[in-house]
Length: 227
Image 1 (cartoon, rainbow, N blue to C red):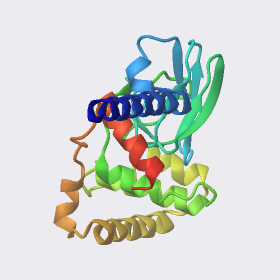
Image 2 (cartoon, helix red, strand yellow):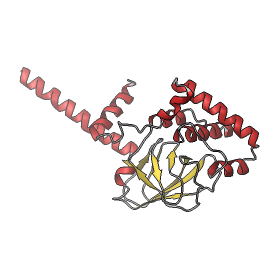
Image 3 (cartoon, rainbow, N blue to C red):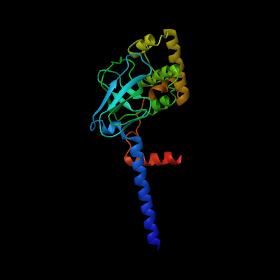
Image 4 (cartoon, one colour):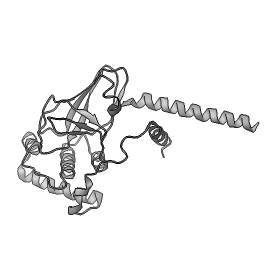
């Protein structure tokens, strides 16, 4: 009798795990960085230099839904690398516009440039992006400045590349920009509890990037149970 009960319990657990994984896969789609080279996917820079936040057009010509995640990094050889600022699922034979921020202030964005996903995330940038309010223009500017400050190790030069275009495009005075940079740097130090000399240490890649499907199932179950 105990063996029967144990067998039934194991079957139930196996069914639950299988159903959970299938539900997870359907609801979230395939990870962009995992299927980019296997599916017909195009990732194009849509907005011009100085736009905050930027917009990336992702076209899914494949047979399966793909999932883009906030915090994913997209790389380009002729345009600044970008970091996605929202989660989206893109069904087959469709395209979506996804908000993103520039990672390299010294470079100017080129409209129409192709980007590709790389298996890189940044803990500190993810935390900054989580505070981004997409309906507030000033929040977008502050978020972009905080990202640039972190990526430049605390030594952001506002007089070159993308910051110059941001000033012109958003009708910001240089004195206002300098004040915004100072405020953004103070906010970073308060958020991460670091002093000015320690800001350079925040540009660390997430060592937990690249989860396995078991990790994904575990995260899905925890999320479902509210853990």
